[in-house]
Amino acid sequence: MKESEAVRILRDLLDVANLNDLQEAIFRCSWQGLSYPQMSTELGYDAGYIRVVGFQLWQALSDALGQPVTKKNLHSRFEQYAQQLAQIQPVSSAVPLNKFGQADHQDWGDRPDLTTFYGRQSELTRLQDWIQHDRCRLVGIFGIGGIGKTAIATQCAEQLQHDFQYVLWQSLRNAPPPNQFVVEAIQFLSDQQAIEQNLPPDVGGRIDHLLGYLNAQHC
Image 1 (cartoon, rainbow, N blue to C red):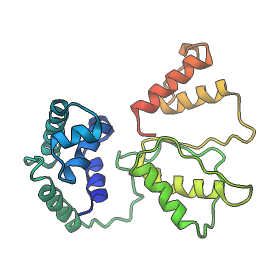
Image 2: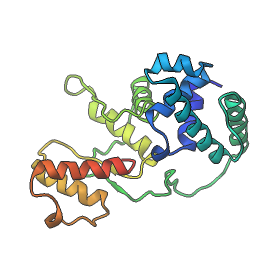
Image 3: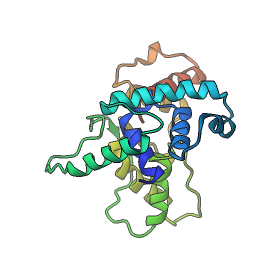
């Protein structure tokens, strides 16, 4: 099993709240066979601290898989789990829900109607890999006008929509003032529970409020 496949399984087993960047780095190093002292040099953390964080990671994986997971048996446990997944082939004609069990927290705004999409497959795959596997929080698409930047962004968002709790599409063409957009985004992410009168009066405070929702949910 390749490291990238193992990391994908790791992220499926442990949600964002239970997996931080250091734990994922320790997982990658462990998969490569590095010792804790070697990880200390590689990652810049004290070896004792890495050992503690690693123990917490193995415990979380043990709970998720229902059997003991250690640094030594990591490969065998994940390969066994992958084989079990391969034997499960559900067939359903229902509309697919995302892994969070939700499909209705979406606001596509004035998203372009993309009836056809040709080419750009390598760029689309790279975008999806950055977002899904590298967990990039900001991706820029640059180029001269008319080459399909909006089209590839639309296609990428549509294909990844079921991996997220909330999807919000906002065009900056004829964009609303920042204060208005931030309020509308907060209300969307709070399931219309947030009241504008209860939000901070300044834009900076409202942006902090928005970031709180973005950090709490997979958006």
